[in-house]
Image 1 (tube, one colour):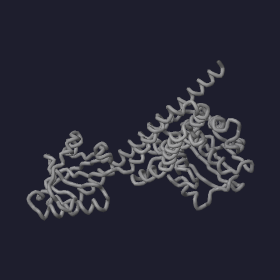
Image 2 (cartoon, helix red, strand yellow; image 1 turned 90 degrees about the vertical axis):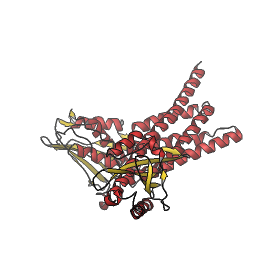
Image 3 (cartoon, rainbow, N blue to C red; image 1 turned 45 degrees about the vertical axis):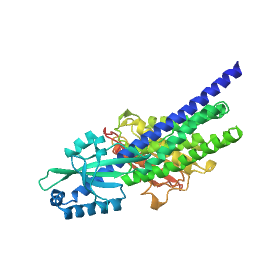
Length: 443
């Protein structure tokens, strides 16, 4: 009975892991895809508004009666289309008749499909530009944006349509296919992978507990390029592993457990990247409350280093240097800052050859601070002004958002986060905070 119960428990754990990985993967990719779609749509609207502002209102009034005006406006559209590499640019009237477009032949045609977005069209004709949902044309995602174009009197004469294919979203479509393949494969391998998947489940849950908040993108171009670049490698690894395992199973009827054990690690990596990305792009208000700074630091260290050790590196809390008895701060957000700094310091230390030291102090009536020092190689002087910038990282698999998020949180409290050199030669990060924090957002 005991062995049967253990087998059932292992099988249940494996099933839970497979369901968690698949559902979690679908959720994460769906969230990232939705965010990219919104930002891509805003980019199209921005392109349309810039284009509309550059059109001559007099020529707009004469488009239907003056061939030269149509040729000039069409040339402008064609030039912008080539420069920005969008799929289509055209002006159409309320009957969906295209008056002029970016195509070289300039032949009139009917854009009947714009009627698929009646609310969007109504808003655009009322003066408010917007973008459509992504639609698939021959398995390729397309998006439209509509912007009003006025004549000399200020009346809206036409709508400018900007069409493009958000090709960067294709990487997520590929991931959907991979997840579906993994879901099918899970029904076959559930028994043989029971114990291995149960262990992987524990690792995945621990990884989620350590996931860091992240910072928002500085520009639309950086948004798409950075997220697509960071996620492409783990997605490629997941897809390749699934294909190899499936091919070997079809050939020999055996499952390669060692290869499958790497899947949760790659899912963890995708989870970390998307979690940081979403956290960085989402505004979250502070929830400050009164607490004792020293006790807060002690509790925070117990959470990230329960045995005073992180990744094999000793963590020591030194004697307090005058921190106030009470202060007002958001404990949850500052705990993330403390843990991030401690983890970074531990990674910088070479095993048993060094340690991480945490100090607290302050001026009892005005401010308090905590700092994290390590015995690592330190941060070069020329990099200290840049390490808090989003996407600046020296780690092979880092996103470059951790310290940027830390600085945002500290800054939201009205404080500052600084990097310096510890007297022993390692790095020193100090967060200085006012005794009373305002209720604001972390931006």
